[in-house]
Length: 190
Image (cartoon, rainbow, N blue to C red; front, top):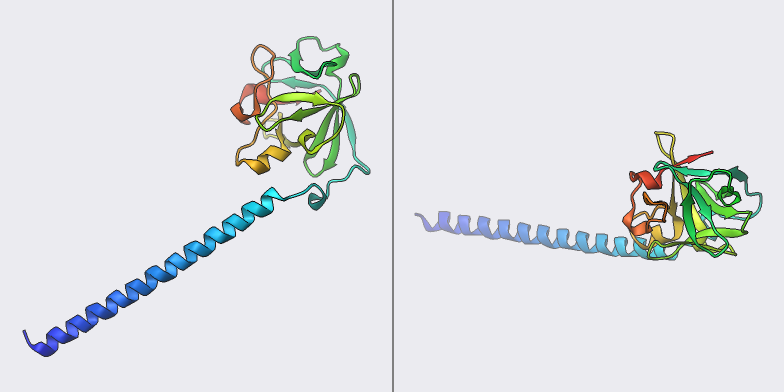
């Protein structure tokens, strides 16, 4: 092989390596930039406030409802702060109000016991006397005509919706063990 040809091949290989190294560095820089953007988006998501989403208490719509789960329980809030299902449609505890506070966001309130439905960070359902960000739920009507309610606050902290749901025995199911397809998390509004 001629020395000139060999030198030309070496120069070509060196140039190709330089281009590959430049490409790898550029790709690495782009990935680092994306990671910074994702981190910033996550931080912005975590510091999201109710004020930023246009949520107000002024002029909210109130709808009188009864929530009947697909597994045949009426949803109720009790005086002692517990949440459960009952088979008795005539019970005053099943009369609820959906108080709209923004696009697709509601408070679930029981005028009989004067308590709001809430969910904690583990997905446990309970009721409380006052409104907080734990009492805000995303209301979605599915294509099957059934409604689901998921925590607005804790969706932002995890990438998983935590739904209001009742088990087969009428006890509440923890939100971190639910999905929108579970029978107990789908409700008919009466």
